[in-house]
Each structure stands twice: as C-alpha cells, then as structure tokens.
Image (cartoon, rainbow, N blue to C red; front, side, top):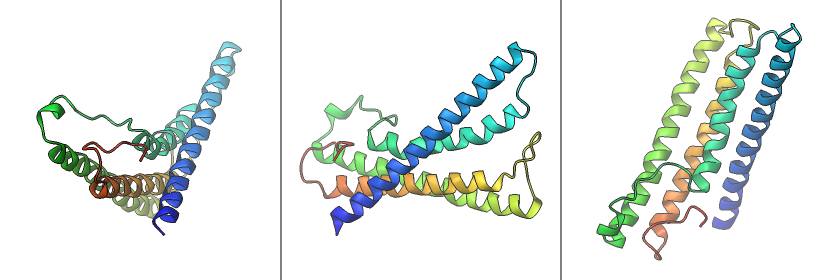
Length: 168
C-alpha cells in the first residue's frame, strides 16, 4: 500500500515536471518567434500575456521535482554541530513547513481563481482568462505540498541517517 502511494506521488511529481517542461518549451518558442518577428518587422502580438501565464506553469510545475531532487535551498552551515536526531527533526520540520507553504499557496490561489471567474478577469492584451492558469497553480502547488509532506513523513519514519536524502 505504501509503495503504491509512493508510486502515485512520484507519478504526480513526474507529471507536474513534464507540464512545467512543456510550458518552458512553449515560452521559449514564443520568445524566439517574437525575436525573429521583431527582426523582420512583425513582432508576435500578445507575447507578454503568453509568457506571463505560461511562466506560472513553468515555475510551479517544477517545484515538486526540485524538492524530490533536493534542490530547494537548505542551510546546513551548523549541521555538523547538531546531533543526528536534531538534524532529522530539522529535515522533518523543513519538509512539513514547505508542505504547509505550498498548501497555503494552493488554497489562496483557489480563492483568487473564484474571484477571477466571478469578475471575468483576463490578461490585458489577448484577454486570456486567468482562472485556468490559476487552477493550474492550485493543482501544481497541491502536488508539491503532498510530495513534501510525504518526504517529511518518510524522513520522520526513517531510522537511518540524520538527514533524509531527497531520493529515498
């Protein structure tokens, strides 16, 4: 059961990274098209809107993957002064704090998306509705929150080394 849950979470993390990567490829293509178009005297209309909305997916799409790979900022300056038990507590607290932060981001973005729907909020140039992109941030932040919580739980239950590897 635990392995199945872990595989499901890993699948969601991989999916969010793929979506973020596809958004990055899209942004790169849009910018390249705009640069070439500007050189030819015909820039791409609405680049700012396309890049702004896609950047949300790029940033939040990669967060869970970055956490899994141990890429988030950590301060280990004093780690060697603490006991293995205290270091383990710091790892668990760090994971749980991250899970809480991304859970709050998901919740607040969900609330903002309800306003966007109610007020028909859209981008300034292409009038792209903002709510679908906000829903994307909600889902991607929730995936990151779940993945960080699971990593914190694994760290708490791990009886081995003090610092939980991002790959366990």
